[in-house]
Image (tube, rainbow, N blue to C red; front, top):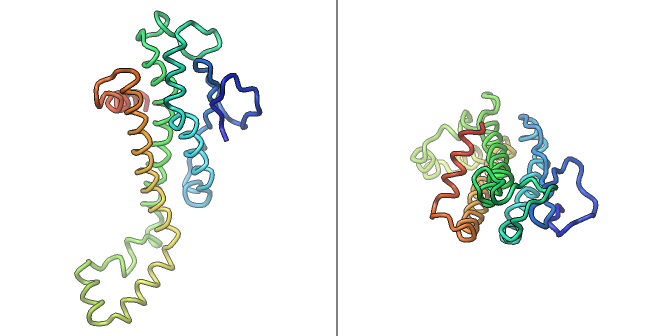
Length: 213
C-alpha cells in the first residue's frame, strides 16, 4: 500500500510521486495511460490507481490536513510554501491546488473516460442494438405475460452476450458513485478544518478543472 507515514524511509512503489506535506511523505500513484483496452481488457490497473489514490489522499485527509495546518514554517523540501510564501497566503489553498484537486481530477477523468469508452463499444456488438434491448419496458412486460419462454430465452441470450459490457458499465457507474461519496466526505473535513463556507471546496474544484483541462 501507499504510505502516509511520518518521515517514511520504506520502499516506494514504481511510478509513485512523492510529496512532503508537513511531516508526512505522501506517495500518490501515477495515472495510467488511458486507452479503450485499459478500460475493457485491463481494468485492474485502473482499479488499483483509484484505490491507491483514495488511500493516499482521502483516507488520511484529517491526519494530513492537520499536519499541513500545524506545519507553517517554510520547509525547503516541501512542495508547499506556507504563510507569506504561498500565492494565496493560505496553506489550505496550496494543499487543495497541489495535492487534493489534482488527484480528484485524475480520478474523475479516468472514470469518465472509461464510461464513455464502454458506452461507445463497436455498434455491431452494442447492447443498445440487441433485439432484447430495443424492447420497451411495456413490450417486455407484454412478452413476459404472453410468451414467458421466449422472453427468458431473449433475456438469457442478451445477458450472456453482453455480460462483460454490462459488468463494466455497472463497475464504472459504481466507481462514479464511490468517488462522489469519497470526495464529499473529504470536502466536509476540509470545510471544517480550513473554515471554508459550505459548498466552497467543490465549487473551487469545478473552477480548478475548468482552468486545468
